[in-house]
Amino acid sequence: MSPYVAGMRARIGDDLLLLPTIAVAVFDADGRLLMAEHVEGGRWSVIGGGVEPDEDPADAARREVAEEVGLAVELRGVIGVYGGPDCRNHYANGHEVAFVAALYAASPVGQVPGTTDGEISATGWFDEPGVAALDTPDWTRRAVRDAFGWWRTRGTAGEQPPFDPA
Image (cartoon, rainbow, N blue to C red; front, side):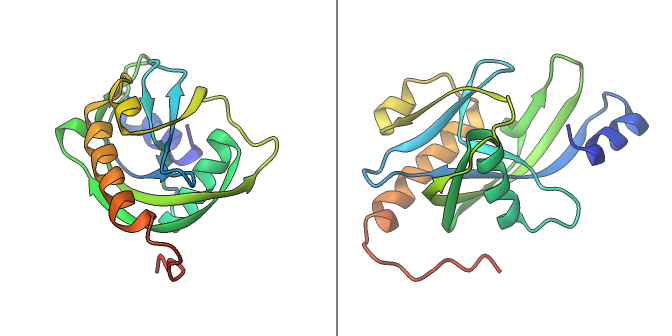
């Protein structure tokens, strides 16, 4: 939990907190999607997390992938933005959050040694049927469907201009 969220929790307790977040669909050269199994809950999802106050969402996307799985990534585009009833979490400690997530497409460009934060218990590269067989939250199913659609139309198109998140 970030210091900002901890401060908000100190004020509001377990009540619903709306959070801006990012998610990152990291694709390898073969069009497989990186999925991560979370320690809490044991469900699989794309990499993601909260955007800190004054943090650019694109910077948050790169930071979260580095922190959670130790990868450096190149952002390639925005796939979509997700929110609504599927984007609510009730944590074991009683906290309730709702989030709005911007989903970025990305490619790995290297390792970031020693940065994993312990939130992830396993990772794997999966094709679309492989992801469908995983236990995922509802919003992740929507995001993954859109991510593979993005990959089919843009990911295999060869050289692309650099993505400018601004």
